[in-house]
Length: 388
Image 1 (cartoon, helix red, strand yellow):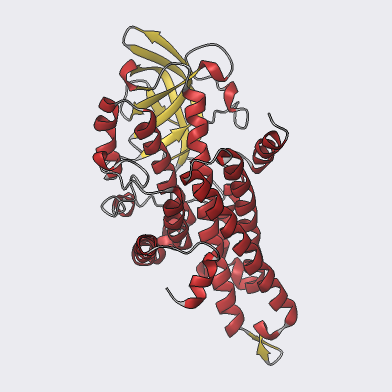
Image 2 (cartoon, one colour; image 1 turned 45 degrees about the horizontal axis):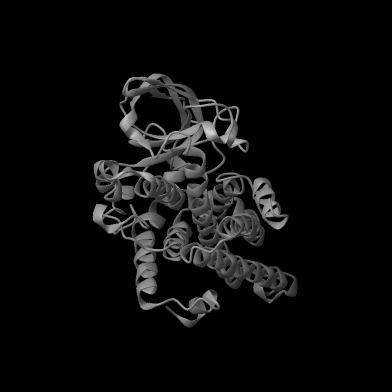
């Protein structure tokens, strides 16, 4: 790593293993993702073959235990991976993040039979996984979900729908929060649902602003029969499981914002050093220098906040949920603003698809919404502050 890049990590001195992990992810992203990202975006192409190539590299179960094929790494290690992948394509990196969140939930809350049944094929990326919480009528108010699972012998019969599900229809496994009991968080359970289960279907592909390389569809349950043996943990424990998954998922999506924004800043710096106006390169104008300086400052602050939150997660600190929310709020807001300002540096060229920055702006915008909106992140932070 050259000195200019090394400066980005501030107080976080990466060890040899972390540098190797980072270099591996950067190399894969540069060789297999970056050359194709704009075409995938333009064609709305889901690159399942390239996604599956991440399995042998250990990215299918980054923080899953080794006995089922996982890499057993920490959340700071994961942040380095997602940051590196996102520099090539935030949509690609985010897809890998969601798969890892679903796999971690099975590893953490599943029994041994479930772990052995699902995880070896998930960590190898033979199977791809989705996380299903949001519904058409419940987003931020996740505890109000209405998808009902009624016990019928050794099965649950499901009716309802999940909304905005990444990979829906393409993926093989759906880690799904359903209502098995009364209203409120205590009535929610978690089921692992396999593609091909009778009664499981998918809605039309949504036409989105960004993340064009992965599909987003409804997941629909119509008298869908799911074996009771596919339930993670006990009945009524689904809401804490879902929230625990989101604590880590928020760090991941922040890392995806960080990598995408760094890529946008790098493109803006390169352009500003080449583009001439009024007889000199535009990076010689103080107004632009100040903009670039602010972008670098804000992105460096975001990186330190994310790495601090990830280190707290690895240390099992008592305030992990607060720090995950703070990092998600700050880094995704900063990432979008930096990318948007980078587009402005390129002027009209920034608005063109071939230059890559307008794609980054479109991809990063949704990071302020998913894994809990940034308004909900403020609610979480405030509740911790006032002791709720």
